[in-house]
Length: 176
Image (cartoon, rainbow, N blue to C red):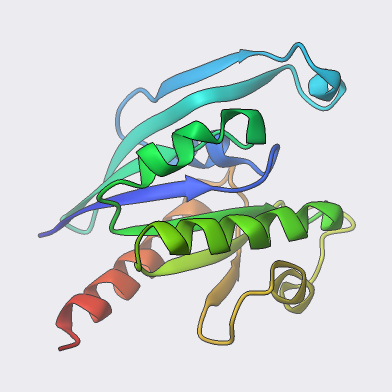
């Protein structure tokens, strides 16, 4: 019975808000606002501060904090990473040009505090999705980092990712 703060980050349009909405046991606190920049052709709204959800998994409580994906809101990244137990970098596996942005986020969040993290290839159910090896290369994830598939709209898929994160956190906790 543990409690963990998990930050869900990733480039713009990688699926962070959907990931949290899919699994949260409570209504998600969201700061989605209408997009007024050139990105408005991609989707209608974007997170400007954070998303917050909570889920119970096998007796553990996970507090999920989603970051904004656009760099103009990057001032929130360090704030949200305060006291995090671990972080998930969500990557749109159909958008290979965003992989270097994910690599930068891995470096940035790893610099805030040393905690376990996962690289999660979202949208793996879509045509043109990159293979996990391509996601690993594109995000420069180390060989010690788990890269796994996900479909952020499927609760069972999101659950698998979070169970993997909890396993990493408990393994680290038990290591002297």
